[in-house]
Length: 469
Image 1 (cartoon, rainbow, N blue to C red):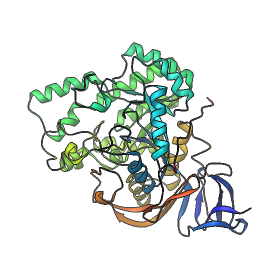
Image 2: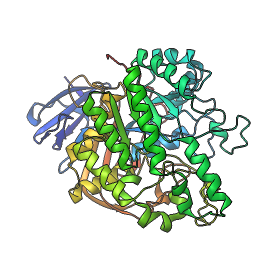
Image 3: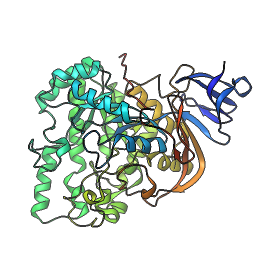
């Protein structure tokens, strides 16, 4: 057999927790044809020498706002997927707040068709549940969607006068309707993903703080306290216990949430959680005052005690996945030139799909977690949760040829002006990193190599999710 691609001489982490030197990978068409000893590898049209590097299952970012179709002035599918490729990401899950929003099977197909035409990496989608689209839940599941989402912590005027045109009218169902929706979601076997904050607490505190004239960056944190998150997660777990659905908490920043998720897991409930580099690496004590509106994100960056709990959750349970909440905004929307002006005016979120893996590999080099654990957090476990395993999230004969190659010794500095997204605001600008992706391989094709994006629109495609239970 002649292969299309062979990867030689690297240390291979197949996704089962072990690192194996002395073996290589052969790719034919878009699948892994063989994983075998070096002298058993077939000849190939293309050979990558991975000496001194680690070869891992293609990395997955389960939380990406592409902004496209519909809001291409911030980001488009080509720039987003190029940034993903440069960040070692072979698959991402796109969020719902595009135009039209993914609240129906028809709208889902619009996003899928757009992504298939424009993406350089693979993708799936989070749909959204509102009170008027319950009949669409099963249809979106049948179409292969990876997740269905509740957007708690927000309430938007349907006219758009609340300021967020991309999510207007997309508020979370009221509690009784949430229960009905969760029972329907349980029947589909698709996980329910949730932005988990109590909107009533947030709205009240925002009014109080604005009445006091507070516009400083810390006011944003004070308007979204830990209790808003704790209450929402606690309520969701109670409802999950009743409905039997799978529940995944998105972008978890607080210690109470870690505790609640761990307790639910110990109880045997199918509850998992994601955190993000901004919560693992920044604190409000050190970074919010420094970066101001640039670091504004929802939920907000919390305390050192919360950060410590997240790392403990990675070690002991309660944190299962690292995503990014990649959320591109323009410099004007993020108030880059006036980061300490009116915090209520600045948009929440910043880019992350390209910077996440170098930041987390830096923590591996510091000894805060192992590379095998990072592969679990950023590939194997998200693939399992979101219906992509074993086609993805593991390296084995027959699985998709989605592969990331990492150089743990390569050093660099994050420079927002060199990122591939269309808008590149990030508080990580200027941070030093050690450990970087050198190659990103999607469906057997090298889409990124040694600092150059080689992929073309259409190299990636929608990967349907499959749920056995």
